[in-house]
Amino acid sequence: MLNQNEPGLFHIELKQRFEELVSWAVAHSPDHSPQLSPADFEAARKEITKLAAHDLSLGERNAEIPEPAENGPQYINVTPAPWP
Image (cartoon, rainbow, N blue to C red):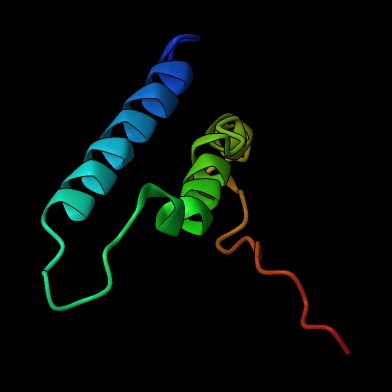
């Protein structure tokens, strides 16, 4: 089980590693291609932030559902229905 600090630590480490990757990519971009800048990674940075801030209580909610051996459902549909 996650303690209260682990989601925050995950978010901090993920952001730090992404920024290290951006720094490396900018420093090692080939000379024959357009020069990269940290601003080129802004869209990825937004997506990483969304992923890191994901609701981690999903595992706790799933733990409340009984296992199939305990007369729980064998399949739980978590995929939303397609738009008509």
